[in-house]
Image (spheres, rainbow, N blue to C red):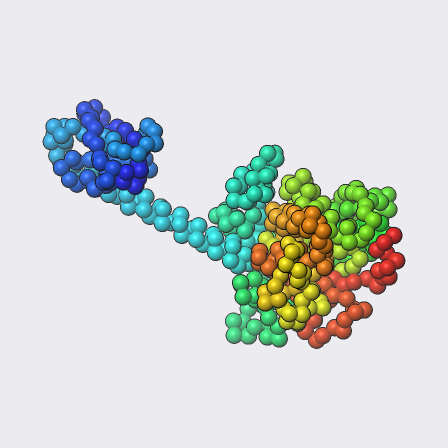
Length: 455
């Protein structure tokens, strides 16, 4: 129903076959057309076209938006007197139409609330993002991409109803979860914002594999300069442990495409070599990684894969890493700081930097070598981090841990929907393995950093 005084002009035509005459009455701006229902004017049409369409009695047509009187069509009163027997049923239809519209609006609001809670609060159940053509005005990034062939698809974090769909799974046999016997009591398994923290024993791979069975995962890895020597072990162990049974595209960013090794791949998996330039300092390579992922997300990843997993290359897989990690946005606890207090985190502490985090803020310290999410969310993350680094560079500032510092700043204000435990990133040479780490899934390869980084 239009607000009094702000409605435009409407005409309405009775759909009855009687062909009765019509006349108009004027409702002052201080009053609503609804106030006339049931009064001496016997109004059959109101200024809300949705009611006209829903009632089945009236048809509204927008004539123009202007403040002032609302023109409302009615039966001629003499015609009304001949229709006395139908008056109550007509009024009842109008009231029924209003009730149906109210219920429909309430249902939509409830659906949006559920979708918003599902998509923006926990994100636990948002499993399959959509790669459909759809325009989004919800962010500057989406606006920037409107000219693209497909546009930026809405992700789970956008709160669109269709993105909260739960995939159907086939009949499975698995042990029942015991509500009063949690699988892990030695570690935190849920963040304060209801994001699960993924540890061994907290998930069932069979159920998750069924839910994600039609998902395509992209893995980005940078093999610049001498780091290309780590590619063979990285890819061979990925084929053994990473997303087994799912479609995977390995996106290898390198300045040495001829040195990318040829390895045997499982069905539905491929290596795509992306030739990029090099930089003199390893810090520059690290910082430009965000820019390159952002650019390629816009150009091709949005159209090719559902999720992106962004990893360091000087590592190897040593145990299962599957779809349990997938979420709209996820980060990984840094193995050095997972048990530390926030004052010990090596955040960027200079207020002039865009990566600045005060000492009394911070949830966790996330590692720069393992993060990801749906392609639109990774695009937003990498674009924001790249822009922040560019702003810092213009001020002559370089964050203490480069892209990792900006990643932590972003994930502080954009809470990840899943957090991976240190099982997913560990260094056996630097750290002693605690009993709570039942598995080590992705571990550092021994190397001489000074020899590798600057050559």
